[in-house]
Image (cartoon, rainbow, N blue to C red):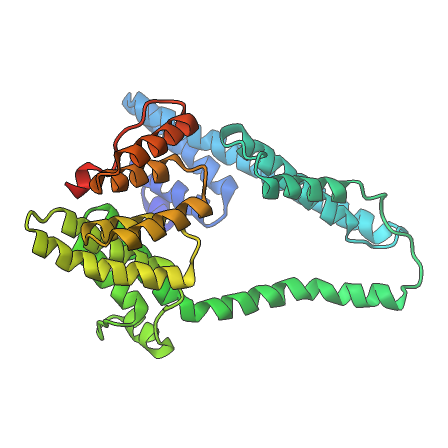
Length: 348
């Protein structure tokens, strides 16, 4: 339309610029460069230096793109012609080496801002790539053995495995989604929302208008995720801490204990859950149960300072000052700094 109007009467500089942009988007780089040059001249005549400079930049961009594409097509045609004329047996070795080199450079670039070679898994990935780079070269033409033919079929095993993992994951996706929403709500101190999301993950509550709830209901909920129970326990525990009335406080500690125990049935060695369970037992004045939970937490992670600090607060509640001093000294030795009486204020 703009081209037809331009043939009838000369377009303004703005319309010529729009026509150049349309030509560029349609892939006609030569026409777009000519039109931008025309728009550049029109803007110069009008004394609009800023717009003229922008069109000059677009002219340069168009020329660069033209040269880049032409050079790329020439290189591609040269490569395909050489491959057709070559007597070297075809092999995927070159493609594999190029891909590995790209992966190595990508990891190196990432390591500039986030060095993670101290993680064994990342170091093994680098070692795997370097192992591929030691390839002796392009394989020569020879008859394949039955073992090689079998191994060749194994290349399809990885995508098949990936599809299988995705299918296995589908029933768990709604539960994972709601557990993550519960974690975020707990972080933002929206405790009732955290409990609600966790119960939706477990399949105990549903919102029939939300498709993920219907999906989760069909699969029976995600009952093997220990964090769903843990977030229920944490929300109840923190709500209880905010209560001044001891009876109300205990009314929140009891469901917290139930949730923590269910979480520990799935993940028995989680020292964080054990410590929180022990704190709730302290709040319920069930000191023997708290002692067992603290002892197991220490066995699970004997070098975690915070466990000893909270254990010392537990002993102080019972008036066991000698034992508290011994545990405090041990915590000081581990931390090499003055102990902070963490947890003691929570239980006052």
